[in-house]
Length: 383
Image 1 (cartoon, helix red, strand yellow):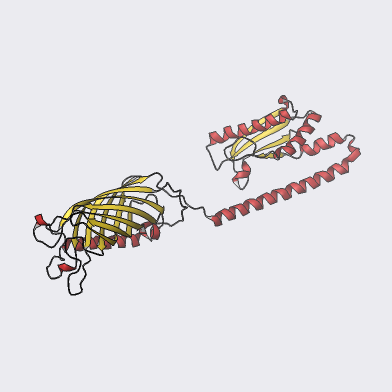
Image 2 (cartoon, one colour):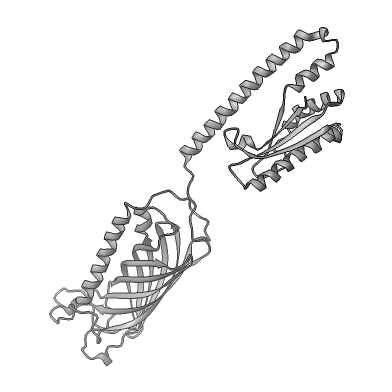
């Protein structure tokens, strides 16, 4: 009885610790992984004992772990976590056991095996939120299974329940302490199932075991993006883009009016076009970390500017940028230079002489919001 009280006290302390951790760990949602992720294998050594209804009045129920009725055992399990809080495992346990109808330790041989399918509930993750760095996990489980007494050649169906405690010592390996109960519909201990007077025996197997868990494949879970934040960011990007387009449209209207006002009075419409283009820089955008032009549409305006530069034999200034929010200063400096060189190469294809192209690299900047707008090259005719 004393040992059982110690086990129950341990379970109570575990539950209180879980409740306390609920208020100290930040929660966040995670996404499910692929089928081959989050598998695990377990191996345990145990100390187990059988007892049943026929123990009433014999004083055995007060201490089922007496030497003449308990024995060591082993177990192996294979399972998978489908979410941070829910897993299924198949567990095979047993080998050595003892019948309980005799006080003779030598005569109580009862070799057996039990095969259970169990659902595991990681309360640490379910109540406290998933934390890949958590050392201890508190995991109750329930299941159904079948057992066989090899000594008495008997089979029985039953249910199982218990508590698994995992203490992670590395990313892949945990040390386990598990207590549990297996209850079966008929006797597996060598005694008749019908105890007389309408009493049917339901033998129970209690155990405490220690062992290890080893995770197979990936063991972590990805955090689900905060969609509210993503939507807000997307809206801010859209608002900024709309503002830029509105500014560009206003500039285009102003330049068109200026061009029409000059007309023939300028004496040379080509010069008017050149002066307008000179005042209108063109932006070419890039994807994060890349020096390849993201969209060929950006080259449409560049081609118009290149035509004016070729006609007027003007110098074209090409300035490369990167966003300072990502990458080191040295990396961004090199990236901005490579982006400028990529646009310069396109200008040469459009007929601009190489000696008329001036390249500058500004490195990482945070001039515009969102940061993606800083991943650009500005092309303009030098004044």
